Amino acid sequence: MVYKFKPLKIPLLPWLKRHRKMREAVIPRESWKLSVGDEVEVIQGPYLGKRGKIIENIYNENKVRVKGVSLTVRRIPAAGGNPGGLFENERPIRYSDVALIHPIKNVPVRVRLIVDKKKDIRTRATLDTGHEIPFPKIVEKKLDKIQAGPKDTPAAVVLEKTYIPSLVKPDHQILFSLGLDIEGKPFRNLNKEDSRRKI
Picture 1 (tube, helix red, strand yellow):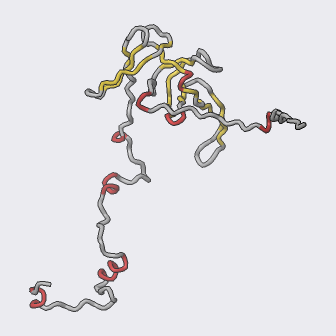
Picture 2: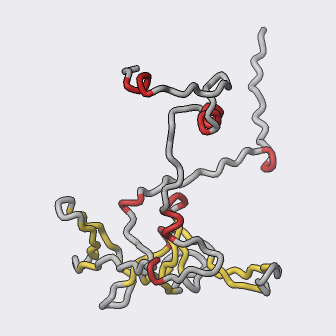
């Protein structure tokens, strides 16, 4: 008579289990419905109900930084001319945890993207009413207004072309500038008759 034993199922201890953190799929930059300068409200998480403007979009992590939300204090030591001290900084929060605020109703709403490929225009519309909410205009810093300091290089010097590319090797170029050929011998003086000859 043959006895068949069932294998014992021993549960793994919690510290022996391998926990793999599932990474969220990155949302393509073109399909983001929120932009820098948008007024948003937190709809999930510990900062529920807080409002603020988006300071920065972190596209590769699906996160945004909202002014006045998720503040942390960071100590920066004094160095050089910087006095140092404690500074507040906004930590990033998840893109899906915030919602755009309707400019007229002043409530958080869900929006969809409207893309016109012919005119190259992207706008947003609310799902409930269809009201269009344009993307905020980002004010770009004009570099012309920034004055150069005493240690800055002038623009004319930066744009000046000083290097002329050549196919000759650098060591051969030095020899030619000294009046020597590749073997290190001086060039022979060409007579007028030799110069007329086609080489």
